[in-house]
Image 1 (cartoon, rainbow, N blue to C red):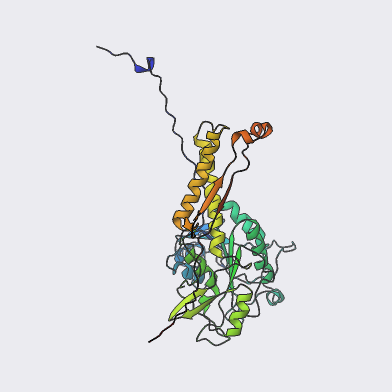
Image 2: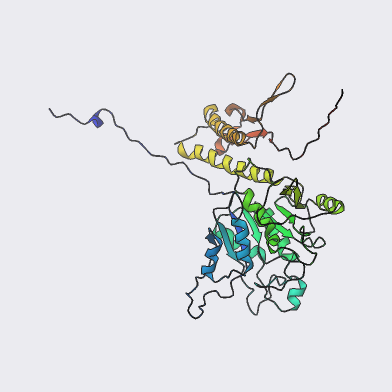
Length: 404
């Protein structure tokens, strides 16, 4: 016998709601470089090179050779250093800084050429000397970074071949305003390219005075020490790491006097030293003195909180303006903080002599406590949380007593 369709009695339709995923990444590095000398050209018997018209991802240094770079170019050496780290980045984003238009007043005229002369300290000449020698002029670094931001998603920034004060300070300001992390290194102790040390999203690494090297001869790899450090630490999930005491492949540690250590630490400049036979980074702070890992974890927590709450609003047909609806938002906030607690960024619940000290607390308003105007606006105010950072131990003091 033929059955009648159940739709006559039970009408059923099922929607598929796909959760949104955040486009924020906290392990991607943008490397700003000069264009290759041989871009788009061919040599006799050589294959035609590709043109890098926009931000391009590479997963190994040799891919740069396809775009006209050579093994002698600074960007090739920098990529080798970055991919030598453990853990190593999956890829680097390469962005070419364009030359200033001819006939126009350049926004930034103090920069290095693609193949600059060595200054005798292991660092290329730059700044006024470069300008006086008639080297290339470049677009403002903030213009370069803004263009890169429109083309690719990245979190960290390093410059290769551009070390003058104007360029570095421009990158520092841009990173602060755009919630990115900027890293730079320098080899001359008297030539820190940043004078304003009140920025929370930039950090410097002094990689000069390499152990075993004369003052005027420094290892070429040390010119990319900050990139090496960022490449390694971006291999750890936010909240799981500290940037202190990390080994860096191919970088030579500095042999510093006590006075030099104190001078750099007072300026919150990080260093690479040798302890107990191990070459390790020392510090882990930004120019303003905040810990790099704290800034990175905060940015991750913000992005995670936003996408989780957004998914609550999106995947439900309606979140009512009631205690139940507000509780749904509260639950997403707690879910985010619990994840931060699980990975190690937020402290767990602890006890003092008598009381529980929670790792975090969440407070939201009751629906009846909000005004009619607030409810009519359909915006929920007053959702707050407090959380204790798990932090990290970088040093310890131990006292003991021996007796017979």
